[in-house]
Length: 266
Image 1: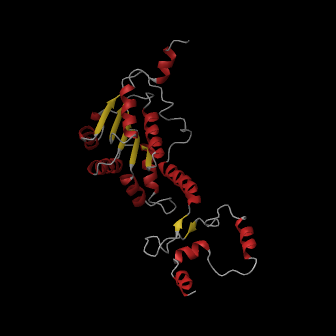
Image 2: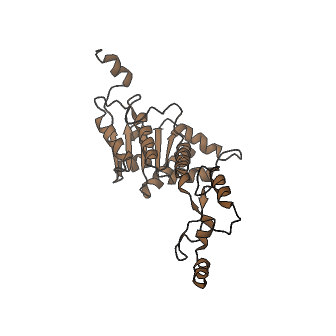
Image 3: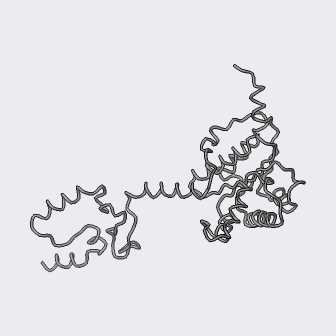
């Protein structure tokens, strides 16, 4: 009897709390079974957390840990949070690599975009006139990045500057400092339509700071633009052309609408 008492005394606290090993009144087995039937998860009783039954010297002894039943919901919440932070344009759900039409002159741009999406290339600059597929590829990169469970941020540059200005107002979602810090440090930043913004000293300074910071810290960046390097800020043009981990692709392809107008009908 003495030996049995000793074994019970040294049962782990985690095991007692997790399993509910307390003295039970008569007929408690039936009552417990009925209560368990009310829960979707018999381990955590739908609390989402539990204390694992582990030895005293285990690092998780006495700690609350996430129950297995919540992993799906946690992952779903994580994906939704990353998608909100990315701020992809409304109605752009169909802009993926699978739906991109690789027309003549777009082969290099498509492959380079795919390399960024898969983490094989850090910087990519896509240059062309309008309606050549630059934005489609930029959005596809961001979506693939999210699929890889890594945060990304898509920015239409003219809208970005409005958002930063709103950061100076008390009703903004994030303060200016928080927003700008996130843009500088997010795993992937996509700057779409660089050059379409109003040119002011303040605008130039913010964009220069963003590009320079990500260059110095080798953080992934995608830029699309209708401008030539001669038309850009000298500092930004220099960074885009000379980073050793980047690539510039000048798209030589017909405008999408013109291409399909000329395409022979089957």
